[in-house]
Image (cartoon, rainbow, N blue to C red):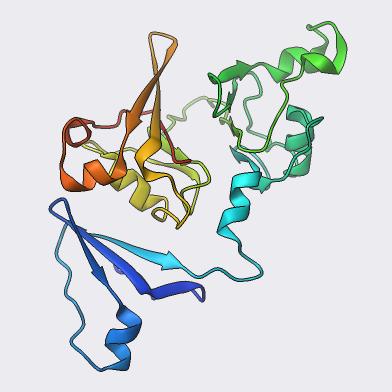
Length: 240
């Protein structure tokens, strides 16, 4: 599949080609200016292009947002206050879609374990105590609302890449074997503020959460244990 050129905010002076666990850096803007030969790419290469920062896009600001994606009308990052709860964030994002499964909303808190909340029970009045039972949402939290399983529909296996350090949070089709490097590449690569040495792979094993620490730089160099870590369907890759 061929890409169709860079976006308006593409930083052509900051291009990285990842090949055989090595990083090759190029300044394409300078190459074009000097009419030098264009670098060649090979099958299996991963190409990462930096993003220019301008008034409409501030990479650093994404660190101060809560993110919501999945079966939601307007997925993305939103600034919340210390009084904000789950319904506040869903409302800010335009509400859920008609196929949203509100019975298993996954909320990932970077400083704590993730939690699964049944909003259907709350809305039916099955919970008591008022709005204080709604999960509080803080900037930096990540919320995923899955789609309801429809009859005759088989949900595609996916992995989720999210966090302020990646360019395009979302869930992506899983294809074995899949490494963290490939998953991050599908999410638009790392931005300039990514903490690449402290990536977390969040995995549920026998109903319990398991967090696996991952260093992106070690993975690029082919170091152990990163080089041996493969993703599984349903994994969440969190890039702080």
